[in-house]
Image 1 (cartoon, rainbow, N blue to C red):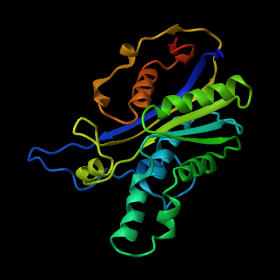
Image 2 (image 1 turned 135 degrees about the vertical axis):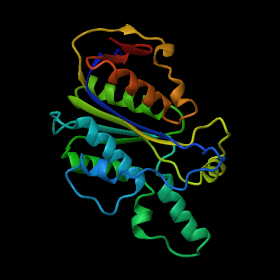
Image 3 (image 1 turned 90 degrees about the vertical axis):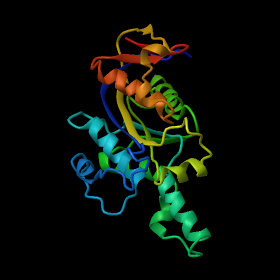
Length: 244
């Protein structure tokens, strides 16, 4: 099925790569997102994990000052998922020999982030989580564009969220990642509507950005960075990515 070209209404991009300092040591903490998240959310959250916070930050920033339709479809993608809460739960069970805290247990499900985003934005349309290693954002984008082509929704909000844990060596060990894999966190979102023009195919090289080498959500980060530089971009799928 040929899917129509979509118009980019707005986009947002947050990316933070974990790197060693001059002495070869990993950082001991991640940047605080509290102030930035509170600036773009309706509710004041006290008990959310980092994965949910990244989703709220990215989605809220993307739709700020935009008209979001109540039936807007929400599509959240992740390759790694809420690794922080999952590690907390497993540590409680395997190391401390204790029952995990209910808060942490509930947040082991990536769908919790979709719930919080939909609730905060007042969305009444469908909410879909696409969780898979490699290309989760592209898969979510295809789901969203199929739904809008079929008339299931008239507007779609699509995001990729990746969380990381410290120390970085532990994440690499848990996920069996080699040194070529980036330890990074990010939240990348686009708000789309049906466009009114056809586009020309864009080669992957046009989107390539070495900044995101080894990053799980590289496809999302590169696409969102591309469209942020082109506020009136349109894109879709027709045997490949189409950008106008």
